[in-house]
Amino acid sequence: MDILTLELLDVTVFQALLELRSLLAEQPGVPLRILGEDEMLRINVAGFLEKQGRVARLVQQGPQWELLVAAGAVPSPLPASAPPPPAPPALPPVLLLRSAFAPGDRALGRRLLLETLSHLDSGTPWVGLAHQAVELLEDPLAVAAFETLQARGIPVRVSAASLAHAGAGAGAGTGIGDGTGADRFELMADAVWQKLLARGGVTVL
Image (cartoon, rainbow, N blue to C red; front, side, top):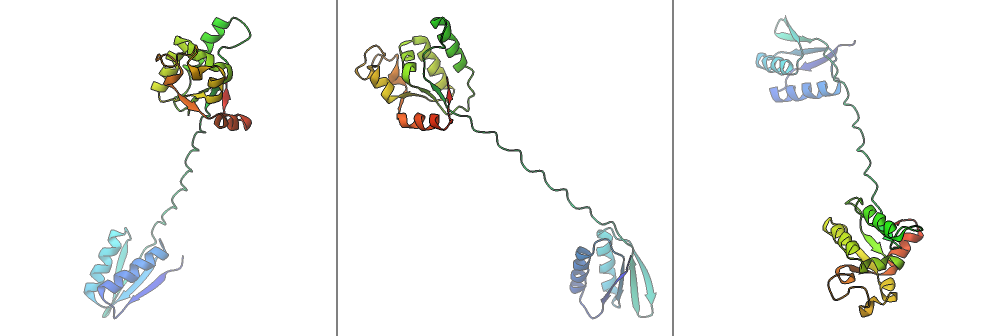
């Protein structure tokens, strides 16, 4: 390995250390031959090399001195940091279009549907009721299930058109006004869930 020569003549201690630091940064690990005359400069240079873990041997040549610096270990490059793990995909909202799983026993189908809602992840953006699902607003057990979802931070929203079609606007058979049905949940413009449904962006039950 070639030996680099650094002459530190007619320089201040500060200048000498600056040049040495720059050389070590550009050529890490290479052996050095450092020449100088000033004794205070030699002491400072030797001390700096010792702090860097570099072994230096002094050779006196009349008024000049020479520091022979052995080759040092070349620092290993830092390993490339692993890319962060991809963010989990956002959960789609859930849209109910029926009041029970069908065909089959309707009571069983409704119970299974409500039990399925209880397993929704807390990151679900919202649960929507449309079409026949607004019939669930007449069922106290279903209303209780929806309120549990909202308590978990999952909003429950009701299709405005479906609610109006079911006669809910007049409070007929839906519990509106008596604190047991649709008045507890947010109305949703139908274009919201229809656009999501058209492009597969909603889970339909």
